[in-house]
Image 1 (cartoon, rainbow, N blue to C red):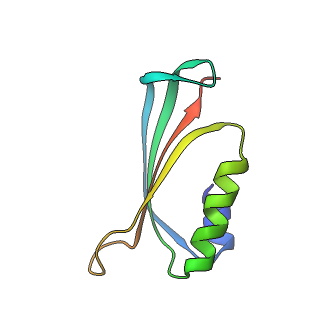
Image 2 (cartoon, helix red, strand yellow):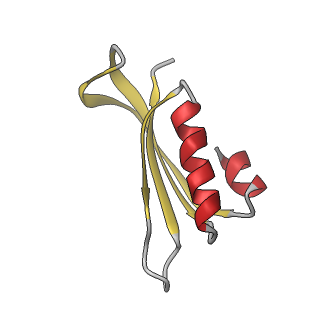
Length: 85
């Protein structure tokens, strides 16, 4: 995912692994998933659309959420849950 962001002209500012956690409800027959948070800077709206499409196609990504933060902060935030391995 960091590679996709950097190839799109973005910059990963911070990355945090929350580890394996129980999911609130079962998703794709999974009760647990690895949680990751990434803060990144990606200005172009088309690139964010491409990133969303890429995340939707990855089988290891159960859920993801992209958030836009204020201009004076980092412009993007990424939260996801990966399938248990």
